[in-house]
Length: 373
Image (cartoon, rainbow, N blue to C red; front, side, top):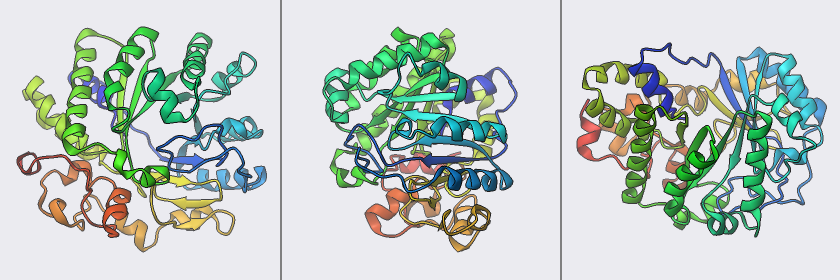
């Protein structure tokens, strides 16, 4: 994740650097879901049967704790379809692991919202545009109304909440609407996710943006981030799955604050770009461990192996943990910004070329931008 709002304020206002101090696990806690979203990387349905037991999950949580995992994002599917979600999240907290919830919001009620707020440090809810766009994209008429009601309920109850928006050809025209919605509803965080080719997202490759559309969208997002900082509007902007955004961000930051460009570049290099297999991992509903949720290859299974044995390394993880990943070919091989983005998504590269170490096909940077510091 690229936390551009946080970076602007921390460097410009000389605030302490945000340090995570541990790995993040995105746990696709269940493959069961009440929606059928076009871009879903897990191909979830409501008929799925959970594979992992409560005790298997708790055992793995203890192993993750021993191996430096500090944050778990419970995703899915829809994690609220598992009856043991709160029990397991409480177990995480008892063991010093911070929990986040990624949900579609449709199961938020007045009866459970306080429990959700008390249990999870952060709650992310997906909204993919205005009402017609969201309902089409989520495959359910009325989904937008229910989701917005859930977001309002969470805010009223005191949740630290944000909305997640996935950029596709179907949703890109709603990008400005999402920011207007956050401003109107006082939603404190917007997470913009670029499409990665996995699950239904792979089946619907044609829905991805062109490089020109992607660049225009990112430029708009940057405009909003700098506008919010200058006007003091308290909305955090984060982008995900396109670490090249940080390079374009640096150029824009240098125009606004030229005297701080070197400081920002040092901060971005330290951030490190794509962190799959380094600071980020994924566990799916069947216990398979991957370097990120979209990654085409598994590195082990928690039912069959101790998590520590899986996470300690091996040829693939050793390669992913190189920074910068100078082994990537194509335009990345002579890019002078690879120490910032770290080569972008390996999942997209593999999906298009079958080569894990080819360039990220969605990189929109110009040759000049790839060569300048």
